[in-house]
Image 1 (spheres, rainbow over the protein chains, first blue to last red):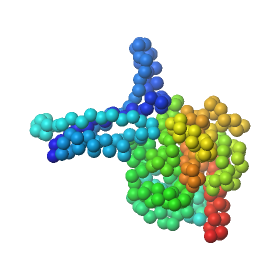
Image 2 (image 1 turned 120 degrees about the horizontal axis):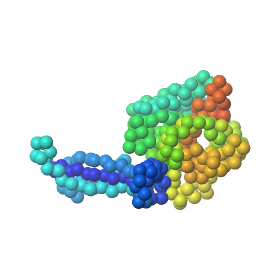
Image 3 (image 1 turned 90 degrees about the vertical axis):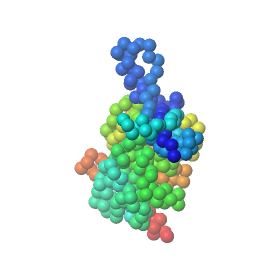
Image 4 (image 1 turned 180 degrees about the vertical axis):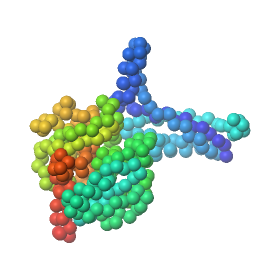
Length: 92
Length: 235
């Protein structure tokens, strides 16, 4: 089995109003960042897992997103899967 | 007539519901622990307000994996009465028993205040003692009560007449100014198509005694009790 790190990013769909993003945008503008057009606030989730190979890891993470990590009524989800070097991880 | 009140870790309105059912309504109540699967023969299961599982990930997202929810889903699918209040409404949407989702209030504030509700449906077990067009005053208490559904789902809900309560002015006018959280179409509560699963953000259990500032919430509890008595007597 190989160790993987999945980085999952969950954001509200474009059609869903994002009041947090609007508030952050207005804060940035007040700080002088007038060039800011839009801010969307989302979630960053790190999942460490083991799998036979990257394809299997991706399939499992995709299922996790579908079943729990995102609510598909309101959220979009995307993720990356990277192989982790177990020895480097242990020496830190 | 027996009510069940589900208790998740982080639920906070369970005792308020229990007080109303037992002391005000004079009916039987059973508290249903989230790890149990036995609904103990309850005729109506309430998913009360609070912060089940700390609202982690999303409101209601983790509660739906509790053992008790498997039984609640089966119970609802067989026509059992399931009534979600506040966090309970969020759980019902996450579970898929009700369409749509509840997102952060458009004002980015936790809103804890009395609101007025226009009663759209008076033909349900939950609203049998009311008239269509009646106005109720019931408190809300939530940060994520902004009802959202995509355009197709929303139009389906409206066509099916699934909206039970809308935020309105004291005179019953449904206008944007009466909307405390940005909910689409001022939606405060909906039912499933069959009419046995109700989700609502306002808290009827917090206005069921005159000493506590109002009795409009009691009308819903009484409706369930009276309707179920008829059903139980008839069977």
